[in-house]
Image: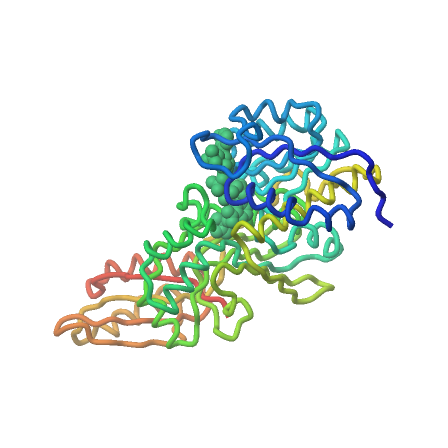
Length: 431
Ligand SMILES: NC(=O)C1=CN([C@@H]2O[C@H](COP(=O)(O)OP(=O)(O)OC[C@H]3O[C@@H](n4cnc5c(N)ncnc54)[C@H](OP(=O)(O)O)[C@@H]3O)[C@@H](O)[C@H]2O)C=CC1
Ligand SMILES: N[C@@H](CC=O)C(=O)O
């Protein structure tokens, strides 16, 4: 039964961009339904921003550029941290907690880098620190991993965790769109980070997989333990070759359990078969595929970025805080230890590869290339060739699974072979 709170829970919002304004709008639009369902009246009393010249559709007295005044305000019980980045977010969140306020954040970088410490602080003070919106936008991932799936040994996680890059790759694949144009579109839609290199170069995905793997494997996965490559090297030509071979290119975060407390975590563009469930996750949608020893295969999907879906996750967390305030809840559970997980280097990975080369078009070239493959213990699964001009050809290979280290050495060998003009691209393949 819903317990009704007779007083109003006062909320301060740090940040009024895509997510902050969305959360505010949802609280206003669904105010009556929220009160009916949760029994807690929420009121946003102050909003922290940086630029007072930006037009806002709320009275000017709601806003302040002095964010410390919000986290120090004794009337505010809950702070929504929606500014992003570590500085000044970490200091503000810590100060809010030390001042006895519950915190909800959408900040994956903050949780990936300082989550263990801040969650412990919240727990020690009997406060909530929630961060569902930090990963997967509107998809509930943090709570299911923390609760419903916590009894499983997770053996594998594979996710499309960045809306901006999935939007870019989808538009390139479907429409042959130009990378820079689609990135600008994703920015206009509010999907991209304040600095979109965070999306394109994989930092955002790295933070998110750090958060998810820390919860799934019960120890902190430091971001330094995640191998990372971005999507800048993915070309339309590679997408076309991948398509002809029965694959699509997705930007994946992958974690494999290697042994007790040891994982291999990586973020990079990946060829996946068109029949794989992640292959049909398009546009701004995100998805997490997971295999647990008891639950088996599981996949979550939904909109991974944008104002409305992210607001849904932030407000969901806020309602949880409200329920805890109303019902005298126990505060944050600690979902992972500060002690780091052990991680394997990418060199130890066994994976198949897609490889595109420009080679000299003359006798014995294929033999020389085949010898290099053999010498590095890399075997071929498929090959396509095309003449480029009278002296050069393009060859695309799919390898069988091999050791990453051997494949890297093969690339060096090919470059030194005298017959390879350019190693154009190499992309890992999952089956
Ligand atoms: N956009 C999305 O789809 C999603 C974003 N997130 C996360 O949510 C958080 C917010 O993202 P988003 O809303 O997109 O970001 P925006 O850039 O749209 O908004 C950021 C807001 O924070 C304010 N701000 C930033 N730095 C400061 C500062 N130093 N002092 C005062 N105010 C500041 C900005 O002020 P001003 O308005 O004056 O510029 C702005 O209102 C990030 O952690 C992001 O990773 C999570 C899931 C999805
Ligand atoms: N920039 C991020 C926003 C959500 O986390 C993305 O594109 O996924």
